[in-house]
Image 1 (tube, rainbow, N blue to C red):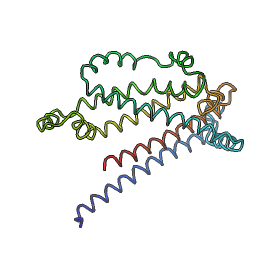
Image 2: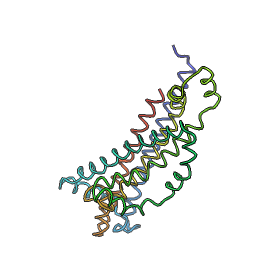
Image 3: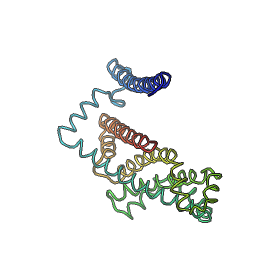
Image 4: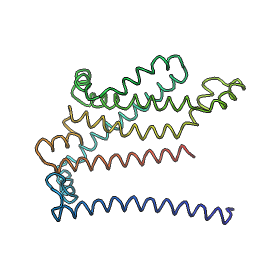
Length: 261
C-alpha cells in the first residue's frame, strides 16, 4: 500500500504533466488564432505568410486530388529508412571506436572535419553516385546525420564511470560484458537524446535531397510551390513537416519511457 504522502506526490506529478500538456496545446492554439486574425485584419501579407484557413483549404485540395498521403508517405519512407540506417551505423561505429581507443584517436580529426563540411556541396557528387532518386536522398540524409551520431554516442560511451568499469574488470569481466552490462545501459538517456538530434538532422537531409532531385514528397511540394509562387502550398508543406516531426518525436519519447523502465 502507498502512504498518503506518496499518493500526494504521484498526484502532483500527474497534475504537473497535465498542466505541461495543456500549456503546449494552448501555445499552439494561440499562435494559430493570432496568425488567422492577423491575416483577417490585413496585418500580414497573406500572399507571403498564407493563413491557417488557406493551409486547410490547400490540404483539402491535395487530399481531393489524391496526392496528399502519397507525398507524405514518400517523405516518411525516406525519413524512416535514413533514421534507422543512420542510427544503426552511428551506434556500431561508436561502439568500435569505444572498443579500440587507438582507432578512435586516429579517426577523431577526420570525423570532426567531415562533420563541419557543408553537406549541400556534396549534393552533385551524391547524385552522380546514387542517381537522381530515392537513393541519393537517403544518402544525403545519412551524410548529415551519421557523423554527429557517431561523435555524440562515442562521447557518451567514453564518459562512462571509470570506477564502475574498473570494478567489473576486477571481477574478470570481458569487454563485451562491460559494454552490454554497464556502458550501453548507463547511456540509454544519452542515446535517446542523440536519437532526437538525429531525427532533426534526417529531416533536414531528406528535405534537402528532395529539393535537389525528388519528383514527389513534402520537400518536392515546397520546392514546386516556390517555383510557381504558390506560397499557400509552401506553408502547407512546412506545416505537414512540423506535424510529421512532432509525431516521430513523441514516438521517440515513448521508446525512451520503455527503455527507462
